[in-house]
Length: 312
Image (cartoon, rainbow, N blue to C red; front, side, top):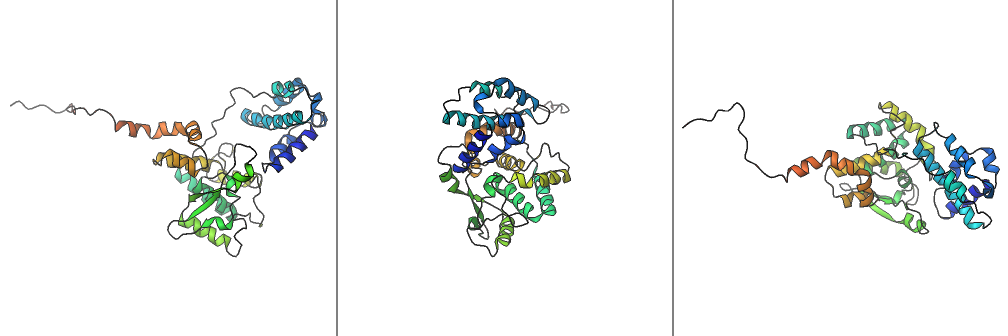
């Protein structure tokens, strides 16, 4: 299995995808499984390994981890016809049932502002990344690829040319990641970014860590412990609230302020279908009452209980 994960990592790098998907399973696999040839794996031992993770991480996380491992094993089978035991991982690593998490934690505007302020208080560069994510609603993996030249600091209508995420795989990932789309930002954030970028060339990364290093392709590995401290500092639970909550909050904020759903999707580099799938409950809970009441049939007002009609 070790060879399959190495080959999968090389393939991810060649496609400019995140190699962490090949590294993550290594953190949890036993030495026995790592050293075993793919062709000799059985569904029983893979199932035992999967089930042994219960209690150490959420079922939905186990499913994502198994998905990464399945991708590596499937690629190995595609390139080696001697591997005929696909049932081993298709059955042994099958997704756990009822493991879908309600992961779209949405914060109030006050909590988002507190989140950003606490990040700045802990580390200015972390604060700058957090501020950018809160204002744009971008994925962290997108924001860390911003370049100095992507900042258009117009005095009244500043914006960022945000790199696309290239989610969904495919062989045209590199071309997608070069593409950019316009996202408006506040003048305050534009000023902070301009100061941070001062003296650096246009092709340089816009957002850096406090030691001058880039945030890397998987920025969460570099900031997750700091974010836990930030979340705790504002009275929330790090097990539930992550940096990604800033994206969810941005999407819901725009929906509730009646920004057209197509525009919300475009500004967040996603699709209308995905917005409707993951955020429709917020539309229903928070705005449908006001919208539908405007279309109700108008009826004559009833007299108040304490009003006595005058006899003429």
